[in-house]
Amino acid sequence: MVLLFDIYGVCMQLYELVLAALGIILFIAAIIFTALKRDVKLVIPMYLISIIMIAFPALSKVAFADVTLEVQRLECINQKLISNPADTTLRNLAQKQIEIVKIDGLDSTNASTVATVATSNALLGDSVKAAQWADKGLQFNPDNQTLLDLRDNVLTPRVKVEYQLNKLQQDPGDSTTKEQLKQDVTDLEKNAPRSARLFTTLCKARLMLGDTAQAKRFADSALQHNPANEEAIDLKKSLQPRNR
Image (tube, rainbow, N blue to C red; front, side, top):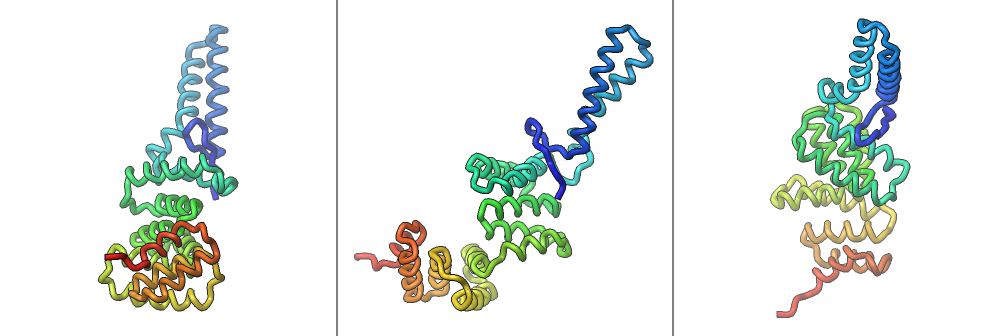
């Protein structure tokens, strides 16, 4: 992974920082030479070269980089989130930056852009969105190893079920996805460690498959593990018979 530095909102690599620093030193030297009334033929090139060296990192991102400045800023935030995953300020900043990148180009076919946004969602704990972004990138870059690895890493058995649920909510008539959901739910019930999060996922899956009795059982199990789980509470309420 390339080491990036966020300098006043501009995300820079180490070589770019060094280049900018040398440019500043050269610019200062040009000012000193000007004050000493050195030869103009020497001073003018010093000014021009120093300005190019200072401006090149930002200009190169706009002109030559395969990802936009906004995506590179998101990469910087990702690196900080890896070290400080619970930092609320960083998490909010990541959410805002994801929205900016989406506005810039939601349907981008650039694998680096998609991988960056997918990674951000994974770091924020939304593995389903991370997998969706990875899949979006794989539509245009089917052999991209970064996206393949990312998708495999985030698609745990529980997330696979959430992923199928999300697809069915968008297209309830998708019989292929429904069959896949049935298989994934069966595998999840057998093998996954028990937790409130697991039981809420199973509850939603059984509801989607029309098995309300099992859904109620899983909602109760979720509340036994964590009585304060808001999602389980809402699911339990939705499963209660309504008075006519």
